[in-house]
Length: 272
Image 1 (cartoon, rainbow, N blue to C red):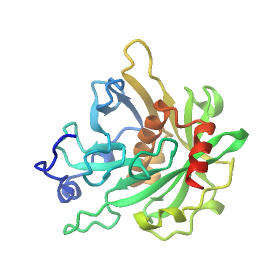
Image 2: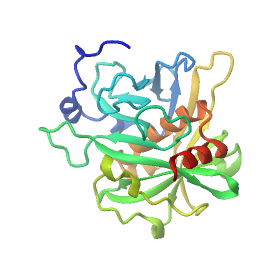
Image 3: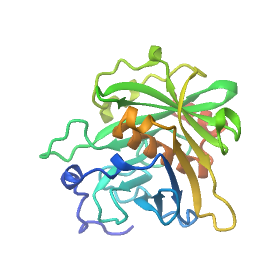
Image 4: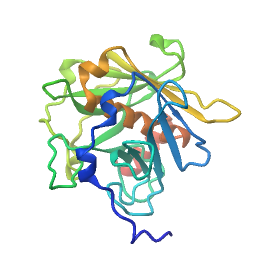
């Protein structure tokens, strides 16, 4: 194991003071990189040359905040590992949990405190979906009033609902299923209180996540498309959450952890 004792921790205060790059991100984004090396990827705009943010993969052995001993990734506010931390996501549980697909997301605080390095935590849980499939769902503050609403990533095939590729579509659930949780994110201690939406409930499609991973280079991982106008209407915090959960889904996808069989195994092993 590498010695990280002398490495400086992420500068969260600097991240809070740095203008967030995600506030001006395009509606179509692509992730590029040699994912077979599994060290880092690039969040890009329309082309691989339009690099926006660095995605650093984490093995979970360093123990450093915010992921601790979780496998996951860090999203930088720029293309250098020295750039401020923008967000992070990883396995919900620390340590090795082979079949558990549930994840935890770390975001900049909804109410920043320059004297604190605290990050808000959110969850993305796998659950039952329509047609004997699964969904991945989360809640996040949206719009000027920062009202929390529920969203669900659902599997989609090319051509269905306007999807350009196989992958997932993000559905904004109906108002009747919006969470009653007050503004502000959950803490790590009460992540288990999250209530999943009803299976297969229809709603407005607000984003598409399409797998690419084309041979022979395998350098184009996926394309993320926000439906026109949604980023402006739902806000920068929502946009960041969509980006982070899309990357999280990709890491699950390449590990074969988005299948119903694997998800069911994970829930059974965890007693959920």
